[in-house]
Length: 531
Image: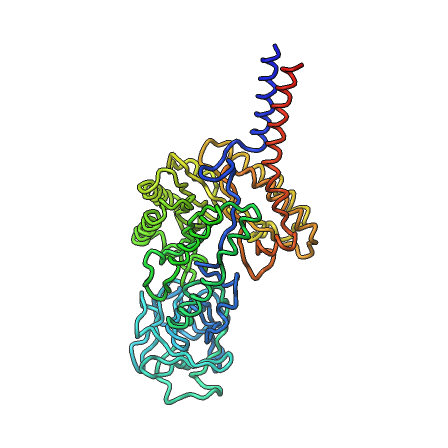
């Protein structure tokens, strides 16, 4: 009777602890724990918003690759337009600008540019007296123009030396006589910078030019993340790092222009530092060839998403093969993430799943145990779509990114509303996914920041506590975005040093409660036997 009772007590308490705090532990981590990680964002893949000063020395730095501009004749007071988004002659006849009157810059040098229309054609002019058209599918000399600036006024000149002018008939032709001044004349235009939002590796390297970009990036890679950061992470209970890399790492030390070599050496260093401090590494392919989401962190040149093309996908699989073959046997490797944040709007699900299946097999060719991580599409996509895809059978992880940002839904939320959203909506979704009998769940990016403009330190502490308590339930674990950031609430180190994110209290709660419950079970069992 006593033995049966003690077994029942032990079983009940053990079940209680596993039900509420999660039974899964991640292979390769010490202490039967889950992933508690920090992203090393802005290091080997540049994101200008993380460290804006990296771009301070670029001449004409407001005219980087992907900048949107609109051009207006000062004499006609009409906008330059590519009717239907391109495919015909350019006109200067629009009273107000829209997408047809907006052009993306491709930077050739600090003063030479190519202009791309909304439908992807380039402005072209074949010599003196030509009419400018938007009919070129790819740029070369005839699509390259010199831009002379005087505040917001510009002169645009072909490489043969002819200045463009707006004719009285509303055409754009390369036949202005002589060199124009800055007065009201047909060759003078007003140029408006509509957006200058892309500040990634492409913009940095192409903006500075190879020699200066190499100097800037070498210094950044050697100082932004160091072995002391791994010491800091280890001291604060972080057991893993998620390291974003770009596709050009597979071609180091001489990647295709304009990319600058050196990221492979830095990644090797990270693995060595991680091993020294008993930290595991997740390699995250953050930037795929062609760009999987059109953003700066995927190194898009102009906001386009071209990755779904078959040539780019094949090139991506080569990158995964390179990374898996190089690091599969390294004791610090925990997993490889096949792709970060593919766009639901531009990456079809069947294309993505096919790539994920092939990528899984590539990793398995080199490692039977490394975790293969597949990222959920960003935008309008259901996380369950990857659960139903049958991507792989062993150590497969789905990565979700949880931000109370980037959506109008969160704009007017109070601090209390944000916290309740974590406890209700996020927690419910995690429970559903954890119970789906599919891949493990990884909250691969989250941050202690929101749209609340008047949050106190206590508000931030409560928000961070809520996220830690809920995300601790993810079957694989979580990773904070990011270790260092000029925006302090995104900066993990700043949050810890200033007590805005109380990691120790929340992060250890799960293990502490399990130990208490197991201790209670053994105590009750013992007392039942001796009494």
